[in-house]
Amino acid sequence: MPAHDDLFEKSKMTFGEHLEELRSALIKSILAIAIGFLIGMYFASWFVGKVKEPLQDAIDEYVLEESTERYTQELLERKKKGEDIPEDIDAAVKIRKEKGLAPKIVFMEPKQLGIESDEELVPITQWQRVEDNANQIIATGVTQGFMVWIKAALVLGIVFSSPAVFWFVWQFVAAGLYPHEKQYVHIFLPFSLLLFLAGAALAFYGAIYYVLQFLFSFYKVLGVAPYPVINEWMSFIMFLPIGFGIGFQLPLVMLFLERIGIFNVPLYLKQWKIAVVVICVISTILTPADPQSMILMAVPLVILYFGGIGLCRYMPRRKKPFSEVVSGEE
Image (tube, rainbow, N blue to C red):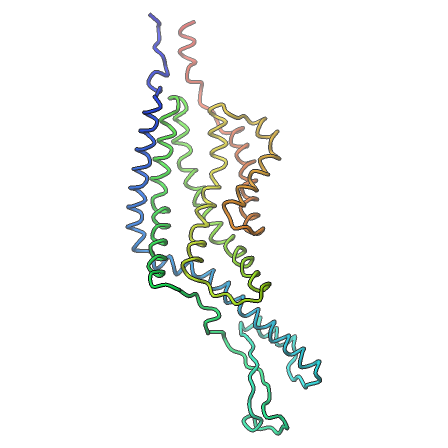
């Protein structure tokens, strides 16, 4: 009879047992998200207001820029016709930038202005804040407001429940590991959560601005006015941070694969060029097809890739789990 039993006997699982663990993890994760969703319903209106801010800022900036360009072009055309232009074009543009006002040319009768002129109507410039439908977020259906509110609660539910969901996922991963490998679950969990939140924060406070600027530039190229529909744009803005958060799990995945023996540091270093290409492809998939947002995601991921190599190389390893057994048998 052997002096020691099979150390992996308790860690062996059948395919059916793995499926049962997966089912259990999914059910618990869904329940956690459902609870987070109920909590998120209370904060949904506040969240929609916060999410609207970058979109509204992008619309306002587009409308002001477009109106200023149109105004400048009109002044130049009047100048070509030999008409008197009392306004300094450069000064007009400067006013727009400093005051945040949009120019608008209107026509009035000379007597209203107290001047004499042979023209029936005299053009003058008015500076005003644009408050018409040109910069308003609209809804095109009866249920769109409700659907946006539901989606906001769902996104908040995912964020609120993310600690529990990450725990359940890592529990499922740990179920298929050997006893000495399960230690990494407790190490990875807090880092995984922090990286997810860091990625989401980068998307919301950095990437979204450039994404919106890029997308609105096509309205200018096509010469059409943007009328953002709340359901479409809000869904896009709310779910973009989740893609960033998932992408930021890269160093932990690298460390995990290295510690269980699938990859090693020399291989990571040797294949770094391929890794950069893969990161760019993943960034393109998880973000809209614009260079700014892809770069904003790809550059941190490349840095995290080399950070993952540093983790693999310098993170302390535990003592080999079977050293005592081997020495005892000898």
